[in-house]
Image (tube, rainbow over all chains, first blue to last red):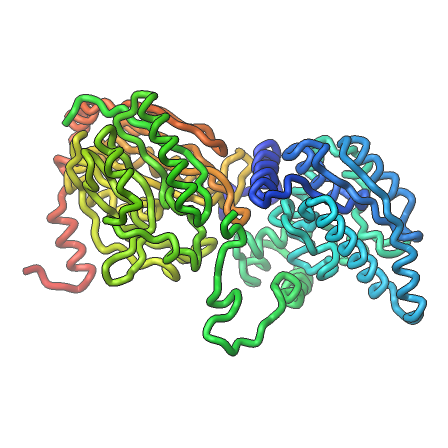
Length: 277
Length: 285
């Protein structure tokens, strides 16, 4: 076992330094100079915005509050609190008219469809603001969500750069505390706020603490099922999570392309993302 | 061998796939190193091109004789220079290579032997493997040049010192993997240990020239360093930021260390060779 990599502990000062410099570097190379981020009032978007404010200065960060009329009041208050705490630019755009206009013709849509549509509505606004402000869309998905596929494809998973995508939820909380994100945001139960009273852990069926410990062993330390069971993880838990990771693989990949030419994009036409930057 | 080697490591951040901008960056840093008194300046692995090139490899490749390197050859009359580049061979193979220039010419080219192709790395997809390790004579004495993963295979530094190298020049591009609770990447801790171990075991000076910056989100962590032949640090650059690190290698310290710890004198390459032949299943001639 890699004792140098204690599962859920990091030096958060250095982590913040690495991620801040990443944002600064990526934004500078893009010639955009600023970022725009959707603020939900949760710990992930608050932490992403805090890193960007450190990297670029608060004046170069735009936090968009994009509530639906059923979004919790607490979420809105916490997003506003994050804006005040960071001193970043902010705008609030109510997405209710767009969402309601669409679902007027789809009245039977369940809450998952509605939640996904809202996430994608927010994405379209963030990308419109990206063009309007010449600002890169800053991602907020953490590694736990990405591995479980607990996010909306082309919705909250969409971004130009993501400082949190290689940090588990537990790491994000630790980093948030280090950065001084207000405690009400860090310590509350995480929620995608897709419907009233939703919490991530109730929906996922597991706590983030347990998930992160398992995923760290499974993914980072490459424990196979036998080794995970020997390490004391519950078999049903291991199988359920492994299946979620497998089943959501498509969300972590670009669309599959039928290969007919001599050279297919991403298979044998491979260039770095930072090509020429 | 000269008495002392005043050197500088340019812990820089190359522009990915942009030779022209990187040439300008090299010129500027070479000047600064020279002004600071360095007689030898080292740049990290692939310093003229950047690291995660993928299909850009042929687009940034240079033959050693390429006129775009004329300025570098000319500048090496003033001070010795080590740069990393993509070398195109006459038969169109592409090597991850580094060259040592001095006195107006290329004195040595090393083609990276061990191309990591696992984890975050995919070098063998794009590069041909080097098949030679040799020490070379410089104006500062006998040296060897190794590139990054070459250092993770102890046979190469071992062969280099047996071939007479008193100074190991290790140029590297190491993307940070596995940030830890002590604030360093796990592979940075690995490098820290192996640099000291090699310097001490091989009683040689060791120059670790590393880079900083990001490519596709991967963080190159810096912390270049120069070690004396007892494994202690003569100079260390900070992690995660650009730096021009100056240090002076005292060549007599190598002599004194080899006197006190004659490990190389007592080395048994014949035994190594015989054992390798046995392991490889060959008969001794």
